[in-house]
Image (cartoon, rainbow, N blue to C red; front, side, top):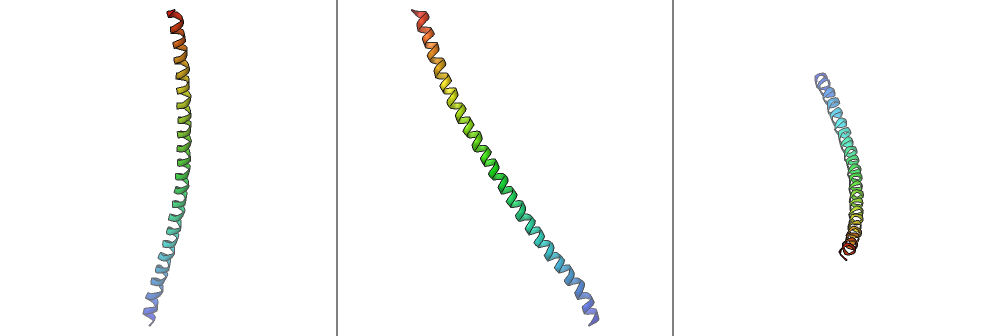
Length: 81
C-alpha cells in the first residue's frame, strides 16, 4: 500500500502540473489571437485610409489634367490665330 501511494502522488502531481500548464498555454493562445485580430483591424483601417487618399489624389490629378488641357488648348488657339 505504501509503495502504491509513493508512486501515485508524484504521478498525480505531474498530471496536475501538465493540466495547469495546458490551461495556461490555451489562455496565452487566446490572448495572442485577440491581439492579432486587433492588429488585423488596424491594418484594415490603414489600408482603407490609403485607398481613400489614393482616390482623392486621383481625382485631384484628373482635375489638374483637365485644367492644363484647357489652358494648352487656349494657348494653341491664341497662337494659331
